[in-house]
Structures are given as structure tokens and as C-alpha cells.
Amino acid sequence: MDMEKLKQWIDIANKFHGGDFWSDIFDQAHLQNLPLHPFAKSKQDPGAEPGFPYADVLISGHDTIVLIDLPGVAKEHVEVSFKGAAIYIKGHSYARYPNATPIRTERVSGSFERVIPLPEAIGTNNISAKFDNGLLEIRIHGEESPQTKIRID
Image (cartoon, rainbow, N blue to C red; front, top):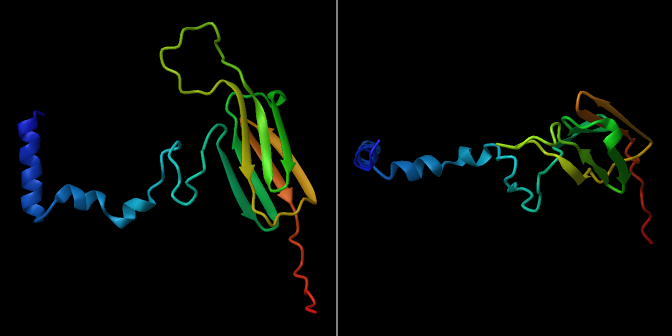
């Protein structure tokens, strides 16, 4: 499509709509709730840098469940630890064909390290982890501490 035809389409859309058609399209509130590109920063947490490995943190009853995607990574090459209100994960993803010449690369290889923040009111009575088909599942079972009355002097 040449530039002249594009300009004609824009003029037709603006005349039909009665205003600046494209500005109205991209300035709608429902577009604010669309999912972000994986490397875009969240409006709720502008400091958050999603990276490898991708992770989800879920709450189910008294359990906090952390799901971490580790495609192509062997469990022997992963270390996981828990400290404070965060999961620390580090490891190494090896290239499947290290001597091949890359034409296009989107898969991660090399060392990685990530801190995954958890809800603050989390207990640590029991922590378990299992690795299945490239998905690491960490389950933290902890009863929330009961509400304690504080005496005021």
C-alpha cells in the first residue's frame, strides 16, 4: 500500500468517525488492562524486571505455590533457596548444539539467577519442591500466625 492510499484511509476513518479516529482507538481505558509483553515493565510494579526463568506465585489456602519455567534445564543444574520473603533460584542452561552457528536465537542459555519475592505473611512450616518436564513447583505450607492482642500501657 502506498502512502497516498494510507492517507486516504486515515481521512475516511476520521470523517466517518467525526474526530481523530486513531487517537480514540488507542486511548481507550480497556486497552490499559491488556497483558504486557514479557519484557515490558508493569504499571503496578515499574521496577519489576521479568526475566529468565519466568515464574508465577499463587496462593491456595495456607499454601504458597511458586511455579518456575525451566525448559531444557536439568534439575541437577538448578539451586533453589528460601530466605526471608523470597525464593532464590540460580542455575545453568546449556545450549543443545553449542558448536552450531545460530541464525536466530530466542532460547536462553548460560547462567541465570533470579529472586522471586513472596507475600510477606508467609510461614515456613513445610517447604517442598518437585521438578517435572521443565516445570519447578515449590510449595510452601505455612499457617498464618494467629492475631495476637497487644496490651496498651
